[in-house]
Image (cartoon, rainbow, N blue to C red; front, side, top):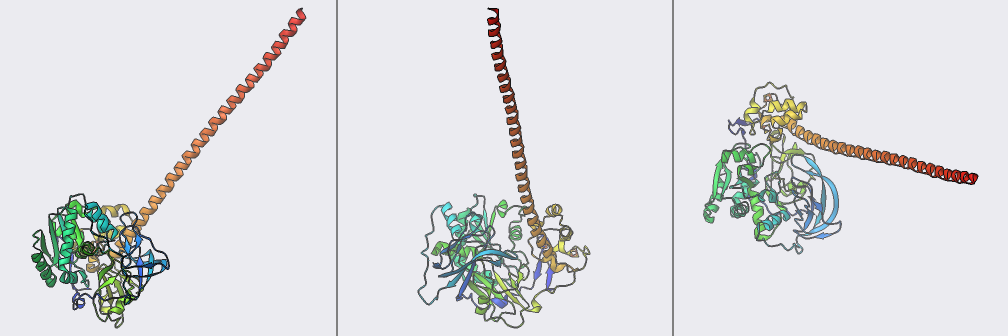
Length: 509
Ligand code: SF4
Ligand code: SF4
């Protein structure tokens, strides 16, 4: 992990050893036939989908098994025909850690029997119906963030440029590179569909300079298509140049303002694999059921890229690639910089899983002794988000959320560059990840406390009004009783007076 060179400003970042060629020697393997699928309902940013099947139910390939309900969730489909074995809560890969999610566990039918497929709908005509079709197809960003694509494409016409992200900058990951080499035409027609949806006049296809085969393939496909609106923009092989905000700044020369989406700069950024998935929807009516995953590292016998049905257990995926070899020190989901270690290969591949690394000892960073910060400034120099990691560190340790907000913690993309260059070996990114999680928990607790307080105050107000009403009623009642009593006394007195008068009159006679 010490193999790096600092990339100078304005974009920060590092030149890292790519380690991608180990998985690019063969074409994408599309023959994986899992026996069992664990299909998570949480595979995207936003709330989980709701399972729409029951235990024992037979499902066909392409059938919806998860209803997105409220946006910004995403629908989930069965990538293979089979029978629902279980509906259960399980740990599944989330954005940067494992999360609990409802899952549909499916026993896959024997593929040698007649494959059963859900009849697919046609690509509709209107903009709203097309956005809805993308939502129903469960398409999400396949670059790793898994943001629901329909939400990104439903812009209000303020997009001038579609940026197609083929800058796969993180070490080890090569799935986009291979897809661009093999399916350039499909990616381009997917991009054309995206352009028509967002109203963009131009599409910039970002590819790193060192991806010569992908560059050749995409250039040939653009020439063949003859669409002059689509242009290739080569970018330096710097990590993390492929980060959405970093790429926009690099290509457009404009920074996405903190707390805003890229559309604030007139851009929509989509991954090349997402364009490919959209093309499959438009051409064949296929929802998102598979994704390309890079299976790599010295710990796997035949590193390669595999088209994987969503929900395939990692163990089956590794077996498909020849199984483990040697002493696997760590199993990592994602790349070597932003990925995270998991302790079980029973976890399923999700729509966000772009890479699985079975790493030997010499491929992972050792856990070193952490020393105090010496304020050398290396971390600030490489930070692609222009943050001051050393200050963020200080505030993260004291959970000073107000100052963390001021320092822009939410803009940290957890790229790990600051960790790599820190001479004190401080795991800065872990601190920032934990601080963000604590910040979210703090925010949730604060909202709950606010809700509880407002409920308490409402109750107090209700009780006060009730008390006032009771007191008013009691006062009215007392007044009524007093009035009744007075009336009664007056009536009695009047009767007495009448009797007296009558008696006096009798006496006078
Ligand atoms: S690189 Fe490490 S030691 Fe240097 S300023 Fe940043 S946190 Fe401190
Ligand atoms: S992890 Fe965050 S603070 Fe560190 S370099 Fe990356 S963006 Fe900057």
